[in-house]
Length: 149
Image (cartoon, rainbow, N blue to C red; front, side, top):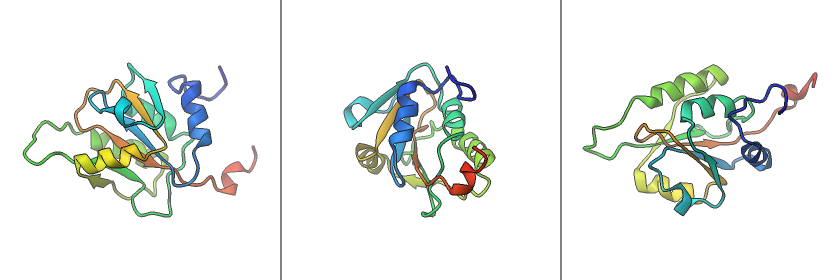
């Protein structure tokens, strides 16, 4: 163990976050997402929900500020009324970590799958909420964040 690192973040996930570069994307997938069949790199966080993982990841993961929407959600399939309100929870978490956050990009289900195929990694979770999948685009760590380290 190390000081200050949330225990929910596995060594494999931390190594992946470190290896990612500016513009790379991380999919955090719910339990229904076809993670294994789509992933170039598959990470597992079984038994954990996405909000808890998102809070921990955003302690270290800068969002891309060079594009208008660095966070992507899967849009609800038209006519499906089963979506939970998890996106509002995501908004609160992200705003807490990054007050300059604007809004989400919503992407149709199959377009989301296509984007997930080209993501740097997919983190498969135990999240049970439907349409809870989220893509984070990594930004840069600005020099002022490193001052005093």
